[in-house]
Length: 185
Image 1 (cartoon, rainbow, N blue to C red):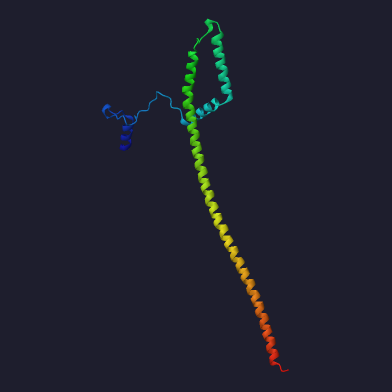
Image 2: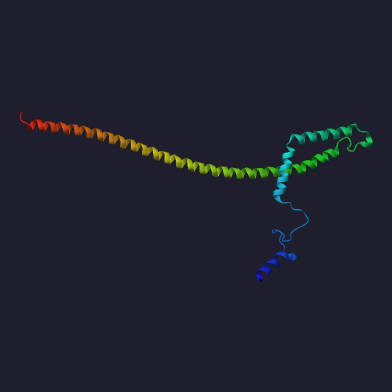
């Protein structure tokens, strides 16, 4: 029980200022910033990047720019909100780009992770297929050897039968000649 209390004390009680180390993360959790769950934020980044790559986004953005520039060039002076050099439009594009680039990179990194995992699965499946193919190749070679052996046995048996038949014929001839020689004429 004392160990648990001492661990809790070390974890949650502030350290004295002189024992703080800059190379260790702070034990206090900062609630100043919202920390979105990585998977949720990653899915958002992928959907955002996917949408930015569509024709719908490009047409919409082009229409927005045409309307913006047309309004600020053709509207009366008091209704123009972005004078001649379109500074506000440039600021909007810069802000969009500063948010879009990291989101697109995050989406690409997630896709790379998925591709890497899929490649690993494919590689292990290929290794299993190769092992199975090698096994089957050895089995087919073994069967071919057995068939060759069986053919050799069948050939040997046929040859032995032929020789046995010839020997039987020769024996019959010898028997017949013996009977002829032993019988007087």
